[in-house]
Image (cartoon, rainbow, N blue to C red):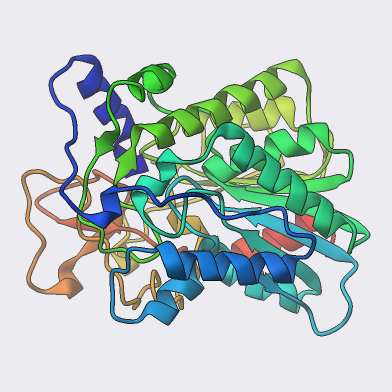
Length: 383
């Protein structure tokens, strides 16, 4: 979905195609959005789960599991927490993206919450419903709720969520630090600025089979417009001032939707705190002289991994859905001239669109360095 944004926008600019949805509830928006301003997080979870149950276009027979994997959640440590973190997912994804990280951080004593951005969790057409204020206000509200319960407050975000929490942190002195995973500061698309205008003429940029219970596969043009707004806002913040609190940032050299080099440069120039760390998955960048940056090879032939994708960093190899032996295999991966092999043991894994020497690559959806990432988090946060 998000992986093809630049290509789809380019096609629409040239007026060569537009996506026409099938006659299905998945491509018709719900009547309204759920509330996100409840006075307690427990009430927010309860109301949101009920709304998902009433409005989701279910993919499988296991409705309870689909609700659980799309609803906001909380993980509390065994003893009262002094530190808390609020996680915000990316465009088209779900709060569940942080389940592995939340479990680990709760064991380390954190109070962890992961919210649902309005328009998510039910059907792709619901991304036509929210405005920019809905996303920003939901984050501000739950940041305040969490700050009332802990002495130290962090925000974390993936992709678009990374943009949103960074902008929140620039204006909120209560935020003590950030964890940013593939933050979407700099998209690899020269056409993204046209997304708001395109949304007035076409409802859909991409229509795909919806077979993934934690991620929308299809993209309304309104969703691209909301992402563009998050990019515009965070870039204005970064251009205006530096963020002087600790930050952990990750990026794949082979990210198919972002500009990794621009993100690394922003880290080095706009995030000066000495405790900050940048984890770069790929070849060591040339002329690198920042000791805060760690490069880890993303070519792991013993595990049939060619490189890292936009989204794999968040998931432990043991994850039961996206993990190394998980139940969901992301085979559709932008390779036009190859077909998936009959023997899954011959599959290789990598970023969207990667191919090589007649070897089919499924999407890499887990992080072989997940335990190392947890150690980086502990280092940056002072655990």
